[in-house]
Image 1 (spheres, rainbow, N blue to C red):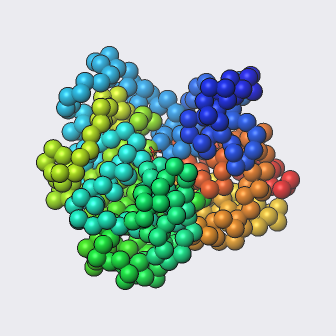
Image 2: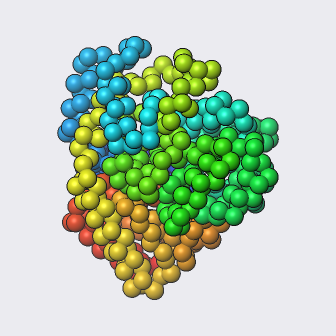
Length: 421
Ligand SMILES: *Cc1c(COP(=O)(O)O)cnc(C)c1O
């Protein structure tokens, strides 16, 4: 029984989980324990089957246990799991990424998005000789100290730590501005312009629910960075190879100085990376003075899974997934509206979000959504075999394994649950 496993887990793992949001803290109840997954479905220790819209938090896009990915990993494993020398697959994956995102002139692979963001911050500081970083409230870039800053800080105020164990000193150089607000960024640059090394942005904010950038916002950020000599760093850990073949930078016609990627790029294995202008990337060791390293960086199983995943994802695949996401968003919208529930369903390409409240454009408005109602919605769906993200601050992921039948099943379940909200 899942309950028994959760009891055992609580005895040996803090909170029973190896990443906090898995614990169902914001929706209540106990997490199920997955034993296997296939296509759009997860199976738990009690033999239940769930239609999965979490997809390993966006790391899986072809569907679970896709034959091409399984085969690539199995083949790679027979040749050894890690060498600590260069491999041809690292070059092939870097080239495959650059072909999709030409702004990534050079690329370094690491093992997690956190590591990639940490490296990007150090590299930006090392390359510019400046200290400060602008981050946008509600955007998540992994759990590195410098970016774990309390959200919602005012315009250009210096951040307060958003986690115990993060010293005020570590975030003293982090400036937090609200998302979708260019005036706030102007104020930050007016005050600290000569000392800002980089601005980091999620091009489509997907860690405060799903919030789209307002028209011109991303271009406006890029322009301000250029004007003040700061690096424009786009965090595509979610959007990369997810919202379009070339990521959000293709969708919004951006050319970032640096890009962080992860999740889809590793095909469900631990792989992430950063890439960008060659003159900036060449500041990394061994060419330059900015140190960065990793025992398992560019791991052969992860690069095999990443290459296999990318090779399946042509423009037609993104078209199909976007179509599924649209069908889901429209269906959820109608279901909630029909029941008289005030809700906003957002959709950007293959991503979908649900807010129980009026339209959201930044973290402050995301916080005003009714997250208790989201929790009831979540549990109602779960009882009907549909697994949405266990927090109203997360995003729903469609993939190639979600078809019209699974979407329609989901919408039918949403109709049933909406009537009880
Ligand atoms: C998940 C995520 C990260 C962190 O990646 P990890 O592999 O979990 O460390 C960074 N940025 C964004 C936008 C993410 O969604």
